[in-house]
Image 1 (cartoon, rainbow, N blue to C red):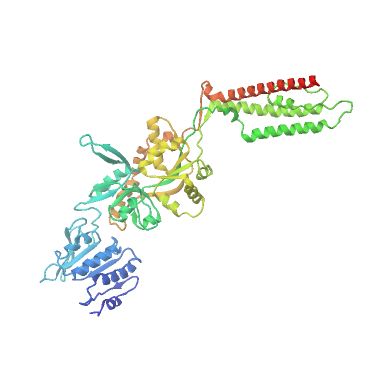
Image 2: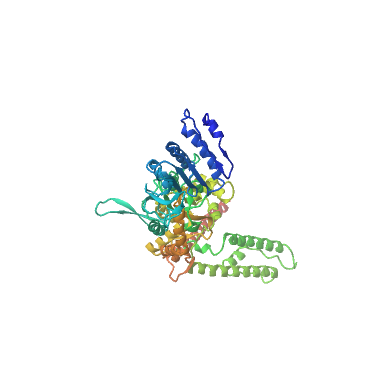
Length: 584
C-alpha cells in the first residue's frame, strides 16, 4: 500500500510508448478524482504519440472504474481508435452503471462467468443501448473461442444492430440543403421542410447505418464562429457541446474547426465569388458623348490649341514681303471641326497645309465617332463591373455582403496582410454587411438588385439564386464574377472522435465515387446554365424613342438659348455704345 496519493502517483512508470500504472490508495485517501486524474493525464501523453492505443484496465473496484472512465472520456483518452480491454471479477450487473460509457467506445469486458470453473466471457456493449453480446469465451483448457461471425473488437458502429435515434443539425444552404417553411392545413402550424442533395445522403446514411433522426436548425442561424473567449456558436457549437450527433452543413474545412469537430470525406470544393447586378440595356440619353472617351475629347481640344498657336507663329514669319501676313481666325478651325465650309487665302500655302492636316484628322475622328455612335445605339453593352475583389475595393460606393459566422469570416478575422486585410479595413468603415442564410433571398432582391451592393459568398449558393431568378422572371438580372477566391473543401461534420465517422465516410465515398452527388447537384442547377454565361452584348433593331435621345436635344436647345442670350447682349451693348458716341 502506498502511504498516500502522492506516493501512489510517483510509482507510475511510463514512457511515450508503453506505460504500466498501479494505483494503491490507502484507506485514509478517499479522493478518487485526484489520483484518477493523475493517471489519466499520464495515459494521455502516451495516446498523443499514437491514435491507435490499447488500454488494458484491470480492477475489481466499481467506484474506481466509474471515476476513471469518466475522467478518461472527459480528457479524450477513450476515443474510438483506442481499444479498451477491461478485466474484472465484477458481474455484468455490477457493471451496469458503466454500460452507456462502454457502449460508445471500442471496448470489451472480460469477466469470470462462474465462480467455480475458470471460464471467462468476452463481452461487448452495443451502442445506444445497454444490451451486451458475447463475443468470445476463454478457458484454461480450450483457450480463446470466438463465436460465429464475431471479432474480438467488433465494428459495432458500422451498422447499429439495435438502431438508434440521432440528432442532426442543418440549415438552409442551397442547393445542398434547402429549408422551406410550410403550414399544415389541419393544425395551421408552421413547420420547416428540408430537401436537397444532402438530405438524400442523410437518408442513405440512415438506411445503411440503421438509425432514425431529428433534424434541427441552430437557434442563431450560424455555421460556427470561434469568439475570443473560446466559445463556439452555431452548428459547430452544438456539436462541440454534444447537443447533436452530426451536422449536415456542408462545412468548410478550417484549422480552428478541426480542433473541436471531425470532418467527413469531402463532398465538393467551392470558391468564393462576387454576385452583382448586371447593367441596364436601355440607351443612355447621353450616349452621344460616349463614343469618345474623356481623354480623346481633351486631346482633340488640346490639339486645336496647338494648331492655332502654330499658325500664329508661322504668320509672324514673312515668307514673301510683298504679301501681307494672313489673319489667323479661330472660327476657321472650329468650323472645320463642326464640318462647315471655310475660306482660306489663295496665297497662304502654309496655312492651307496646316488646315488640310487638321481637316484630315477631324475627318478620321468624325468617322470614328459616327460609327461608334451607331454601334452604341444598335449594340447594347451590358456591364458587369465587379469581376475581382480589387474592383470592389477600388469603388467606394459599393457595399459588400457576407454570411456571418462562416469559415470565410473566421479567416477574415485573423488575416493580417494582403488584399483581404484591406477588405476587412474598408468593412470596418461601413462597407460590409453580415447576414444569416435566412436573410439571403431578401437581401439579394432588396440590396444587390439596386446595383450598389454585391454579395461575396460561396459560388454554389449564389448560382442557385441565378437559377431561381431565371425560372421566376425569365431573365438574367445578376451575374457571377470570373475571379474565384478563398477556396474551401466542404464536408459534413461529426463530434470530435465520434465512432460514427468511419461508417459515414464509407457511405459518402460510395456516393461521391458513384457520381450520385454530382448528378443531384446538376439537377438542382437545371436552369443555371441559362444565366451562367449570359451575353454581355445584344443587337437591337427598333426605332429610337425620345427617352433615349433627349440628351442631344437638350444640348441643342441649350446652345440655341445661349446664342440668343449672346445676341441680345450684343444688341444692348451696341445701342449703349451708339448712345455714348451721340452725346459726345
